[in-house]
Length: 130
Image (cartoon, rainbow, N blue to C red; front, side, top):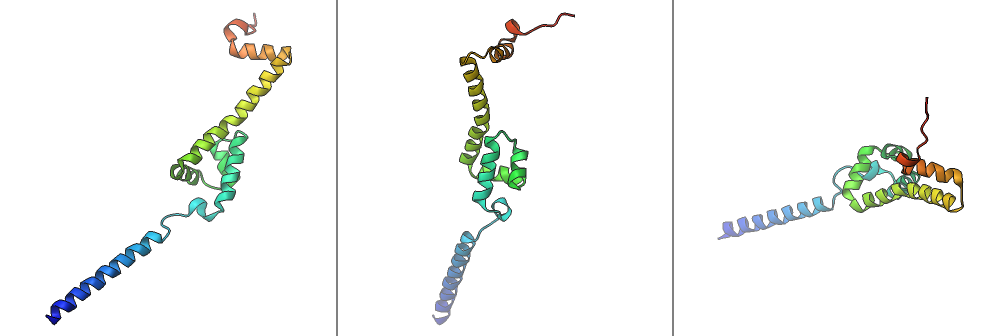
């Protein structure tokens, strides 16, 4: 009887030890730190700025001083960040379109011709005859 009680007690202690070990491993940070330990908020701000001025991934990562692999890991971990980057990348294009449209609305003939040459090239492209 005493042997059975001792073995049950040993099993209970072993189970408790295993459970505590698993709990500790869950709270422990696993893997590589985000952006190799750099301040996440600072890196994200630099990336957002770079993409808002038309930078490519390699250029943005250079500005933020991170590897492209770190950038792609972060995007995989936070898909909403990737969506924001996609929106930021279109900002400069939209501003340029707005400027062209404003110039045309203001009556700028040169900008109007430039726009038509690019958008309706079959009809308005200047052809040089040799």
